[in-house]
Structures are given as C-alpha cells and as structure tokens.
Length: 248
Image 1: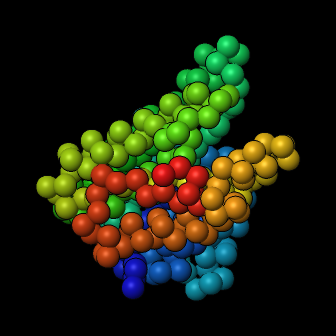
Image 2 (image 1 turned 135 degrees about the vertical axis):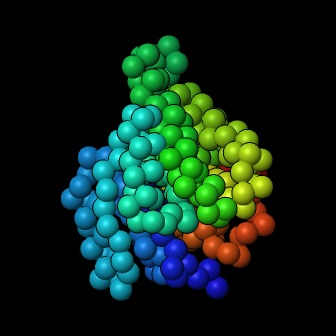
Image 3 (image 1 turned 120 degrees about the horizontal axis):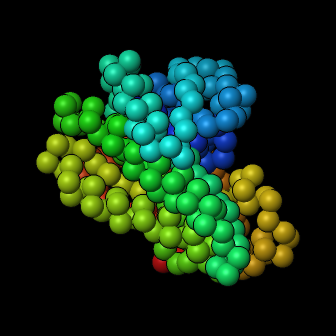
C-alpha cells in the first residue's frame, strides 16, 4: 500500500521540519527523492544521508523559493535531467510574524514571494513536464493559519490561504491531464519553527487542539505520501487537515 517504487519526487524546503519528513516518507516507500534547499546545504545533506542509511536513494538541489524565475527553472531542469518527475511537494516557506500596524512592506513581499509566488513557480516548472506525460502529483503545504487566521500572522495567513485557492484552481486546470493537485494543512506541529515560540504561545496553541498534543512532522509526511500514491488517484483539489482537530 502507498508503494512509490519507480517514482521520482522533488521536495522544496526538504532540508528540515515537515519538508525533511516528507522526503523520508516518500523515500521509505520507494521514491527517488530530490531534496530541495535554499541555504541549508548541510541540513539537506543530512536528510539525504538519513534516506540513504535507510536504503533509499536521492540527491540534493538548491532552489531559491523567493525567486519566481529561478524556482520555475530549477524544477524544470531537475525534471528534464532526471527524465521523470512524478511528484512535487512544495514545502519551502517562511513566517515573519508581527501585528499589521508593524508590518514592513519588505517582509510582506518576502512572505508572499516565498510562500505563494515561489510555490506556484515550482508547480509551473513541474506541470510543464507532467503535462507531456499525462500524469503527476503536486502537493502544496498550507497551514491551519491559512484556514482560520491568527493574530500577528496576517501576511503568513494570506500566503497560505492563497495556496488553498491555487490548489482548487489548478486541480480544475490539469485534471484532464490526469494530474492531481492537493494541499496538506498542518496544525500545531513540533518543528524548529514552533519550538521558537514562547511557552505561553505554545500552551495557547495546545489549548485549541482537541487531541491535546502537538502533531509530528512524520504524521504530516504520512499524509503527503498518501496523496502522492496511486491510492489517492481520485483525490484532487482538496486540503487534507493534519491538525488534531484544531480547525474543522
């Protein structure tokens, strides 16, 4: 079940957190995984080493998610070089928090460029290749914040909400080519990003989770692996919530 043997996957933001978990989840099911990173080459290499230690195969590649043209071009070049790209997972993201009255234009543009524009650019690069083969899976990483909002995260919420709309639109555009476009929306997940929150902030978030615990990156990775599999062939335009009931 959920066998990805013979599949080729590229994961942006694959050097840490949910992206790294996605890389390992796909590789453990047989996919050849390209671990995308922006600046953390050492972390990306660590993810690849863990994949190889477990018997998987892959490589690393630098992708500048903040640059639309570079993001599109790099993904397209990887697909062309490998001769195959079955799965694209767009996990690269940034969160620059702050109240609206303190929001700097540069921070807004960076958040939207990385989380939304860069994500769509990566998808564009992959879709060109997938269209020719009439097959493929594109999986975006949104957030519970994109669905329910959160004070102090207006820019982040806007970027992640944008991915939800993009998922539904792209699903309609490419269904005729047998390409599915879906999204995973994590809630409170134990990652480096959430570890940087204050104890009070973490407890506040936890109080909103009916399952009364943070999720793990591996649990999000499992949902991504499912959407990438043949078993999910009839699922498109959907957002799978991995949030412990935080938002229903």
